[in-house]
Image (spheres, helix red, strand yellow):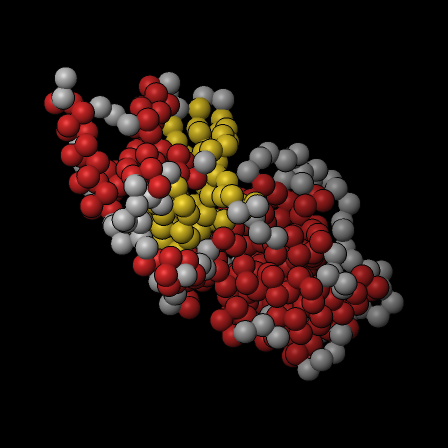
Length: 364
C-alpha cells in the first residue's frame, strides 16, 4: 500500500495535471489502470496486448488532457480511449489471439514507469505540435481521440482519402522526431497498416499517343483517387490492355469476352470472388500489383501486372486500391510535351477497338 494515498477527487487531480504537475497524472493512471487493462483484454483477449493498448491510451490521455470536457469523468474518458485503441488493434490483427486469463496479475505501473510515461507524452506532444495544422488535426482525432477515418473526415469536413493522406504525411514527419525517444510498441498505431495505407482509386481515363505506327504508340492508364482532386497515378500500359480497359470504361459489348472477363467468370464459377486489386509498389521504374482472391480456404494474394489487375477489377466490379505513397503525381508530371503527345482519349480508343473487332468477325 502506498505510504501517502491520495484521496482527492479526479477533477482536482486533472486540474493540477493541466497546470504541469506530474504526480497528479501518475495518480490518475494508478487509479484507473486496472480498469483500462481489463476492458482492453475483453476485446483483445490477450493480457499482453491489453497492457500495450492501455499504455498507448495513457499517452493519448496525457497529450490530450486539455480536451477533457468533464474532469470528474477522467476514468470513463481514459477507459473509453483504451477501448477505442483496442477495437482498432482488433480490426488490424484480423486473427484470433489467446483468450485472456481472468486471474492474470495486475499490470499496474509503478511510480518510475508512470513518470516515464509522462516524459514520453511530453515528447509526443511536442512532435505533434510541430506538424502542419491539417496533419496535426488528423493525428489528434484519429490517434488520440480514437475516431475512425470516416468520423475524422466528417469532423474536418474533408474526404476519407484526404484523411488518409494527412495521416500518412504526419507519420512520415513524426518518425524522425520520435525515433530516439519512443518504443515501437508505443507507436504501433502510427505504422501504416493495411487499413490505413491503401487509397481507393478509379480509372479516370486511358490516353494514347498519335502519329506513329500502331505498334509504336504509347498508352497510359490514369488512376484517380476518389474524393481527392488532383491526386492521380499515371501508368504506362500495353495496347491490348489499354483497348480492353477502354471498352470496359465505355461499357461496350464485344463479340467474345476479353481475357479479364473470362478470368473473372472462371473465378466466379469456382465459387470464389475478386475482393480487390492493389497497386503495391514502384521498383526500378516498374509498378507491381496484386489481386486478392477470396475462396473457400480464405483470401489469397496473387501477383499481377497493374494493367491486368485493373482490367480484372473492372470486369469483376472489384475495388482498386493504391499504396497511398504512390499517389500525388499529376498529369503535368509527365512533362508538358509528353502529355501533349497523348491526345487520343478513352472513347476514341474504344471506338477504334470496336471497329477492329467488327471487321475481324465479319471477314472470313
